[in-house]
Image (cartoon, rainbow, N blue to C red; front, top):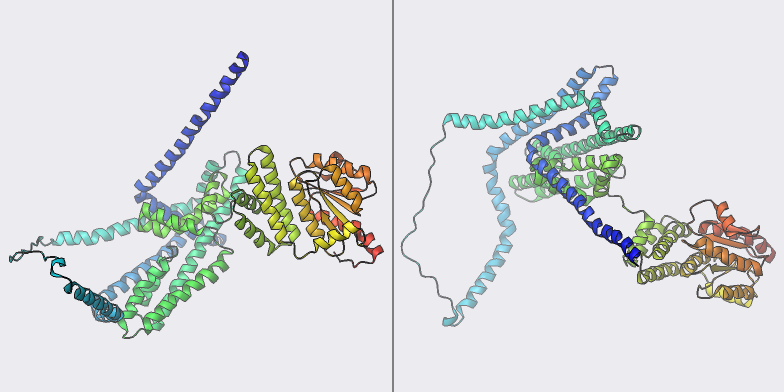
Length: 618
């Protein structure tokens, strides 16, 4: 006993030390995240320009590559691409400034129309509110005198108003404020231009350094991953830029035809704000809709403007973007919204505009860089569980309804046998394996089995199992008789139910027996029913052991009856499994329901020809 207690002391000490060992790791992770977020926030003055330069570099890289393939040197190609790109951007910005300058003096003229529109809209509500107010006042006046609240007693003195007069700004201050903002904007643009030029010139060197940093010892794997990631990011940014420009041009033309002034300004604004996910287009629509109300005496122009934005947004979001992006960008809508909030909190309006491109870039990098795969899980819209795991996870959580919906969705594109083989049989095998390991309690295990039984019963497809049972028991039917036996427990019975349902096609009589009978009782049932084929169903984790025992009992008493042994969800060589289970030429080992169905159909073909029953073509 003393030796035993001495041996137990280190184990208990290890158990006590395990949580303490995990605590510093989680603390270190949270601290790293907090430091990273703080660094992003404090260094936003630099990182915003750096991020914008990186995104513009990805956008301009295809142009540089195209010029270099035309035998233009690296430096001329970079300079030409950068000059053209930023020249177009400068022209767009200058046009927007000119349009805003032309619009500003006209705003007071539109004020009367806007007020008239608002008054006509609110007239009914104001009238209704006035009626309610008068009714309340009448009720208050009819109250007894003592219930009326006394009016506050004021003084006859008139209040004094205080105004603070600031000295007029000097010409030097006005000049400094005006040109200071201009110089700051030009300086920021110059920093971005310089960064883009250097990124484009040194893009191979930067790529190699990143590969060396992320792919230590795995350069052959990391290189194609990053090459593909760079191409995907560049293509996405190009497509996003094209879609937004198309949206802006269409808005400009539509507003010009409607008659809204400064249509070019609203087109530029729409193309820019559409980088903001989901709400950017409607933010851009607010100003032209308000202006359409101001310039018209009726409601036709505002309604047409609203319809223009609605139609274009539906077209771009549901037709143009899926056509260009394929099935989509792969970003979860929730991740887009959360990323927009996060980057806006960190970097303000610049972060809001950069949120969607940054999120897609991080997702693509997470798909291709193993060290950053958590980004793919957090930001992607693909299921984190494969279908089999999802069904099992929903059953494990007690959500039979969602598990049934997953099976129904899969049945829309796959036959029943494939759904059973790829969804329900693996889910059943996972449940049995976890239950035998003690990871699933008896109550939850029972719920999973009962849920699977209900799913199978719902998909009986009107097959007359009761008639088949009567024909087998009476032994009078000329059709082939097939018995499906569970090797040991309830899980084996559920798999046998699936096989029996698949084999019940009308040309044979099929019955699935219960696991509650002992092996001797099952053999006696086989003797009474006199089947032409016996199918033994066995599920993991002890499928081979139980199948071997049941096969021996059946073969000892019925050496001439063909036996099909289903080792469901088997991973490995079937020939090795057959040696372990044992057998002869009359024993057939299969691993899927589809293989079992095909093998049984082969075995009963001669019987069908002798009985004259119709034979279904496979």
